[in-house]
Image (cartoon, rainbow, N blue to C red; front, side, top):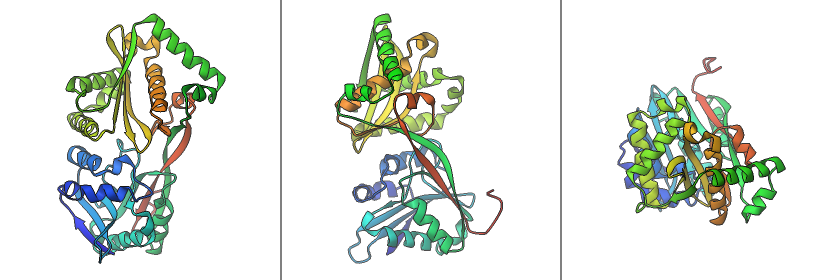
Length: 340
């Protein structure tokens, strides 16, 4: 295998077409590993130094793997780690998993050896091959590994119709969904709409979402520093250009009541963030209303899964979601008790 090290952010554009093609051949290819998301995250939230490895077949020069990493304080991370990136991974052509993984670990052990003491590979789906392969190869180098549960992503496997979905959840919750929808539609002039492309997206819509997110709880107010606002604006606009945006809004009596920022990617709806006006409309459950509408829409679109992304909030399971684990792998080049 041939490895090229990229240390400049221009790599996200330079490799974009090959990177996207590789994701079509990879077993693990979450939206948070697209060059578009990675570029935006690094620009607005990244720190340290980029260390992106492009692994190629020597003769054909076909791109077989991407290790999108950065180094900060002698620790290796995925670009995107942590907090706002729900799934991360190495992007590897599934036909060449073993040799590409080996090439990555060998490179980290030799060419980048002086740059890191610890590695933290966060946000790995329970289905990721990295959980087993990376640990095995790291231990073969004599490194210490630690695999820890980080969170869960509650997921709904979507049926063919809304009625089938309701029939598949608990009777009490089915009743609650219908009751809350009737109450909201009877007690207020309630309408929902979705923004899906750049032509309909405006800065005002993003401002409304940020305001509703802040209104949800006092803890969410501190989330929006200048870097996070810039990140969200850039991300929403770029995903709208790519056709990956599903930006849901509910209005009650002509006022914004709730918003749901979702991504539409590879036949799944990913629920990235939400907000609602609890003070004005809390009694009408606007958060539950917008989730119900968005699930209906996902079913109408024929999507296979509705992924709430990270967090074990009770309401997600009341909608019939089943938890899938998200894990992290820590690697220590020297045996130590510091990670315990």
